[in-house]
Length: 135
Image (tube, rainbow, N blue to C red; front, side):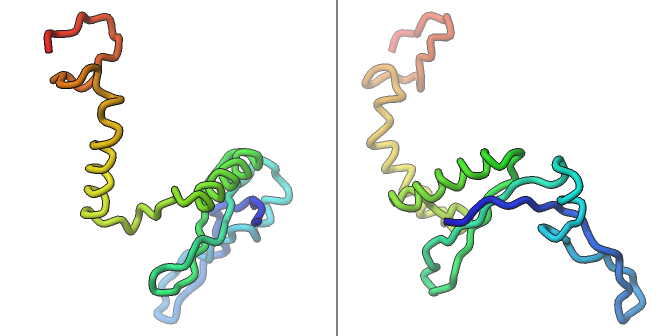
């Protein structure tokens, strides 16, 4: 299991490229000297190994930023738990067709929970104080 780490978005000294233009320095990340001096500098992150892509490429998922190490550790534990139970999904690569298929499945199974009565036209009776209309 990986452990949380602290990193920041500080950059090193600017460099001059071969074309004479000044470019910003590299991101320091975990190598920032300020992280050792100042405990409030930077944020907490965690990285874990996810199953390989269908292409066989290795995936290391980075989660964060978090304000405390405990928050990062808790999020890492939750992410690894979702990975083990099979509920984790890579939403960045979800196609519209896959999303709609999941939505239709959810709609067929969970919709009755959200509606007040079968056949009701209102989406939810939330108890906001207004009397519900006749359905």
